[in-house]
Image 1 (tube, rainbow, N blue to C red):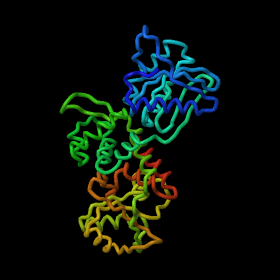
Image 2 (tube, helix red, strand yellow; image 1 turned 120 degrees about the vertical axis):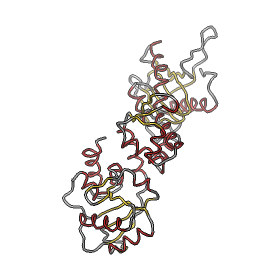
Image 3 (cartoon, rainbow, N blue to C red; image 1 turned 180 degrees about the horizontal axis):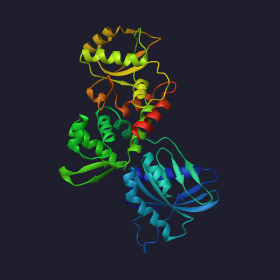
Image 4 (cartoon, rainbow, N blue to C red; image 1 turned 180 degrees about the vertical axis):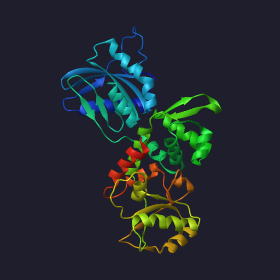
Amino acid sequence: MLSGRLDQTEAQLVDQLVETLRALPGGAAGIAPAEPARKPRNPDYDARIDAHLGGTPVTLLVAAKKTVYPRDVHQVLWRLKSLTSRGDSSTLVPVLAAGSLSPGARELLRTEGVGYFDSGGSLYLPVAGAYVYIDRPPPKGPASTMRSLFTGRRAQAIHALLVQREQWIGVKDLAAVSLVSPATASEVLTELEKFDWIDTRGQGPSKERHLRDPRALLDAWAAQVVAGRAPALRRYFVPGAKADALVDRAASAFEAREVSYAVSHEAAAQRYAPYLSNVGHVRCRLLATPAADDALADMGARVVNEGANFAVIEVKSSGDLLFRERVGNAWLASPIHVYLDLLKGEGRAKEMAEHLRRERIRV
C-alpha cells in the first residue's frame, strides 16, 4: 500500500527499497494491497511492504522523507515506534526511508531499533532471525552539507562554538567573535540544529544557542580533515637552530616585521601538552605578505625539497589564526587547530593529536 501523500521522489525511493529487498539472498518483497475502503487510512506510515527475509515473513511499515537529519528523526520516531504496538512486533518492522540519512540519524535509528534505507543502498532491518545491515557511503545531501560546514568562514564559526562551548551565544555575538557575517553565523547554527548538536532558548533577536555535543562536532570536523587533502607546505631549512629554539627565532622575526602567524603541529602541541622527547621540525600557519617573506629572509631560511626543519602553511585570512594563544615567546595556533593539523601529519602526529585532545582540549 502506498500513501497518496508521497511525491514522485519518495515513491521511487519505496520502489528502490522493494528492489533492494528482492536482491537479498532468499529475499522477496512487494507493495502490500490497499486496505479495504471501510478501514481508515493510517496516517503514521507512507507505504506497507510485505516481505520474506531469511524465511521469515515480515511487514515493513515505511515512512518516507527526502532528507533526514537527527533532528528530523526525533519528529518521526514516535510515529514509527507506535506502529509495532498494533500487531505482532516480531513481524512488524518500522522503517524510515530517505533520499539521504546523516550518520547521526543512522546511529539514532539503530539505537531505537527502527530500520532505515537510503538511496545510496544502505539498509538496516532489525528483524528477529534475519538481521539485515548494509552500510554504504551516504549519497549527496547531509554528506555534502557536512563538508561545506568545515571550510572557509563557516569553519570559523564552528571553531568559535567549540572554543566557547560552555556558553550560550546569539547570532550577532557568534558573528563578532568568529569574524563572519551574521548571515553566515545564522546559517551555521541552523545547520547544526539539524544535526541535533545544539540547544536553543528564546525567540527572535534574543534567541541563543548552546553547543550540546561538542565531541560529536569535533569528531565530524576531524573526519572531514582526515578525508580531505593535506594543505600545501612551503619547506625551508633554517641553519643553526633546533626545533624549540627555532620557534622563538621565528617568533622574533615575524613580530619584528609585524607578520601574523601561529606555530602549529608538533612544536605547538609540545608546548601545550608535552608528549614527545624530541620535535624535529617546526610548522607554522602564516598570513602570506611581502613582510612575511622578509621575515623568513631575516631568519636565514632557504627553500628546500629535502631536509627541511621549518615549514609554512599559508593561510588566506586572519580567521585562520583565530583563538591563537601566547605561550612563552611565541603565538601558538589554537589547540583545536593544532589538533586538526596533526591529524594530517606523519609519524607519531596522530598519537600526539589524541594526547593533545585528551589533555588540553578535553572534548
